[in-house]
Length: 302
Image 1 (spheres, rainbow, N blue to C red):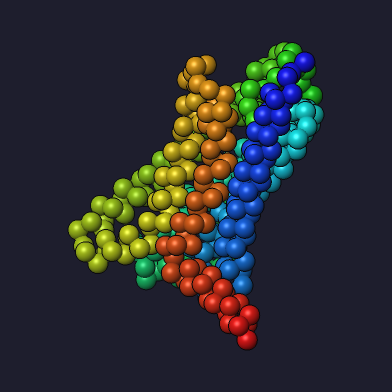
Image 2: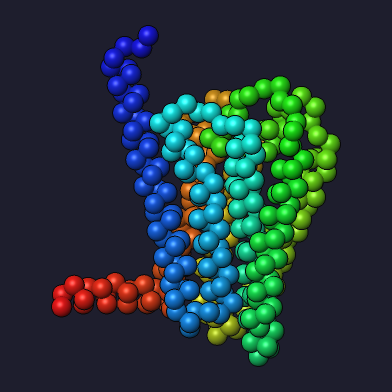
């Protein structure tokens, strides 16, 4: 039996963590939904770049819903999840994670066309084509992660403990009494596919930098149109790489609190920073948000 002071301190720590996590969750929802509503409400922002940004923010909400509500419940109860619930949570988090790469690759392509073929941009990035691109950017990661998750259905587990704050398909595979061979093939295909996404993004920016660096005007245009996307890309890539490196080479000497943070950083940092980056750097969105609060202030004064 724990002494009363130790138990009280533990409960207080859990309460503090609960409040902080809830605050982060509300910030993610508020900031991303604000960007989405601003883009949907303003017809001037119904352009490819803003449509892609809108979908990036929708995905941040989708991924957050897959993690934060369950985590908040776990803080106030036993840390238990059903096998079906675990697979569902893994599907949502993994599909959201891979979708980020899909939409970031699409945004890189959009910037490539805008800078390299400005005269043909409107005729090429038509509403129908943009709709198709958005559909494929959602369909491919959802389908890939569905196949990954489906390969784990009905598998007998020889363990029940996952050393993470959320379900990871790889760890479910490690718990299986007989690891499914189909899952290894699907995972290899998915990794190859999204590595190609990453290579395309890198190639497009190397090409754009080489093209724009020789001209002051082009370089200024590059910085104006690409810096928000680059900032989001670097933030997302850094958090995912750190998570992958930790999964592969993580040290048992790390404290449990640091371990927990390392496992959720890509669910915390990009969803908060992405809308802030775009909200501050893209003039149209910033002005639209400021005008909303200015109008609200006028109404209250009246």
